[in-house]
Length: 174
Image (cartoon, rainbow, N blue to C red; front, top):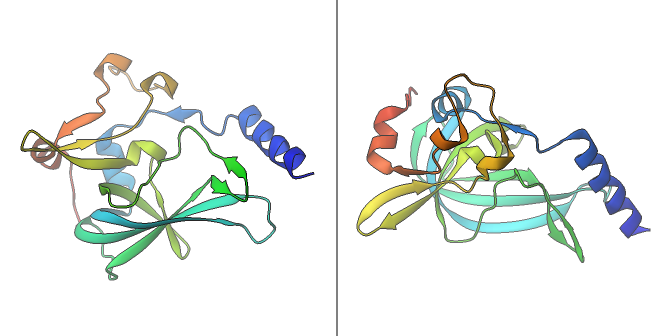
């Protein structure tokens, strides 16, 4: 019975195009997100919803720096649909994946008691050190993006950014 339920929901999600992601420029993601933070992922856990139909992943991020917004707490919880639990796996290609101890910059949207990554996986950046240079890298499959903006092609979409240039080039108005 569980297999049929999962199959049904996966079929439903794929048939309605839940992960047809429209490319959004970093500037638009920055402008439209409620908050932008830098932090370290300290916990990732999966839980069933109240009806035991959907798995959600809850990611706790310890905030190091607030780039936009007015978050008062030292930690936030990001809630995304999908995960692995009780032998079941549900996911969507467009959902961001978080791992414990990774340093991230995340564009957020408040959703009740939780946050969601704004722009799906386009709004989550890993902060990495590349030969002594601080960089931001996002895990997106450019071939799965729908591009509607003029003057944008798959060749012009970047997944890796110099940290300082990135911060200078987006408007981080609080």
